[in-house]
Image (cartoon, rainbow, N blue to C red; front, top):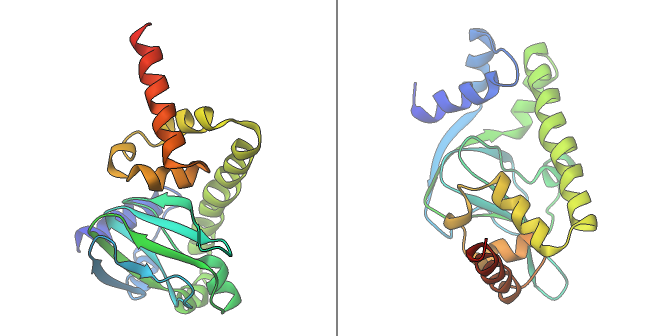
Length: 200
C-alpha cells in the first residue's frame, strides 16, 4: 500500500472504522497525481469530476470577485480533503479554484463513483456524517463568526493558534487575503505584535 493510501486510511478511520471490504471500494476510486508549486488541481471556473486528498503539500481554495480580486477561503495541507463541492453537487462550473502553494502529491477521488458507493455503504455514510459535522458545520460556523466578531489582529492570532505549522509556509499576501486584509495591514499587525512582545 502506498504512503498516500496509508495516510488516507488513517485519516478516515480517525472519524469512523473502515472494514477491509469498504477500504477496497475506496481504493478503487483513487488516482494518485502530483503537481508542481503554482499548478492548479482544479483550475478556476472549470467543472471538476473529483475531490482530492493531500498526502504531501499545501493548497489554497480561492474565489474571485467581479473585479478579479482573489480571496483565499481556506488552506488545506496533508491529511485533508480539498474540493470544490458546490460545483460537484450542482454539476456546473463555479468561480472557485484550488492551487498548489508547494509541490503536492494527492489522491484524486472520483466524485460520482464515491457517491454511488456512499449511498450503499453504512460505514462510508458514518464517516461522511462525522467528517461533515467537524469540517463543514463546526469549523465553517466558527470561521464565519470570527469574520463578523473579531478584528484583524484577533483573526491573525487565532490563525496562529490553530495553524502554527502553516504560517511560515504560506506567502504573506495569501494569508492576508484569507484574513480579509491587505498584505500591508498584515505586515503592520505582525510588527505591532512583535514590538509589544519585546516589552513583556
